[in-house]
Structures are given as structure tokens and as C-alpha cells.
Amino acid sequence: MNIKLIVVGKTDVPYLQTGLDEYIGRLKHYCDFEWVVIPALKNAGRMSPDEVKTKEGELILRQLEKVDQVVLLDEHGRDYTSVGFSEYLQKQMNAGVRTLAFVVGGAFGFSPAVYAAAQSRMSLSQMTFNHQMVRLFFLEQLYRAHTILRHEKYHNA
Image 1 (cartoon, rainbow, N blue to C red):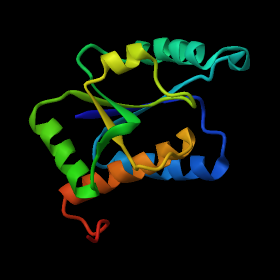
Image 2: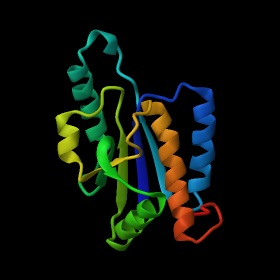
Image 3: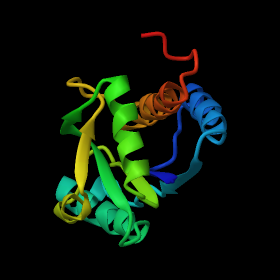
Image 4: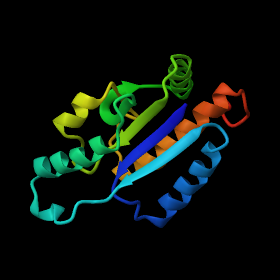
């Protein structure tokens, strides 16, 4: 199964980029992983939050195939434990999902069109995190899920 992570805007915090690079490298041992960065909008400061979400949404939708299983990382999404998330991944693999596409929106979230294109939503916490930090937290959990599925020592619970 291919796993795609779509994010809006480049990561501009060096310590986060270092962590992202570390987990992207680790994930290559477990799955086909694709990192897709949608460039930040030019002149976004002159747009309303709804305009930004609409334009970012159009760019996100261009990165999705009709057969992709789309999961939005959204504060109102379903909560998983690490083990529960690994079980979710296993179910997707067993179901023959070709590409599981996770999406991290921009600072204002997702447009209605992106919500409509998604099959599900997932929350990483009841707390709200910076959209750049969510990338690292998600990749760590994705890596952890794969180690859980392989019964490796990384996850000690």
C-alpha cells in the first residue's frame, strides 16, 4: 500500500524539518511513502480565510486520485490510540487500498470541497497544534504503527 502525506506550505522550522527527514527515511523500510508539499499561496495575506481555504483546497484536490482513500487530519476527527491506528492501517491494507492519502491543511483548515472528497477524518489530539508540528507528530505515529504491526521494540506499551 502506498501512503501519501499531502501538506500545505513548506516546513520552515529547521528542527521540524530534521525530524521529518528522519521519519520519512525510517518509513521507507515499511511502505511506499510519498511526501507532497503544496506551495503556500502568494498574497494569502490579502485573502479572507475562506478564500485561502478554497484556493488551497483546489490545490489539494489536484493531488488526489479518484481511487485514493482520503483521510483528513482534523481536530474534529476520530481519535485513535497508537495501537488502534496500527489496526486501522492493517484494515486498509487488508481491504486492498492502493493509496491511503492523509492531508494536513493550512492554518485555516479545509474547504468544503476537501471535506466532501474525504472518506474520513482523524485527530491526533484534542489539543490544537501548529499545522507544521502536526506533520512530525503524524509521521512519528505512522512509523510507530508500522513497528507495532511488525512487533518491533519501538512501541513499548
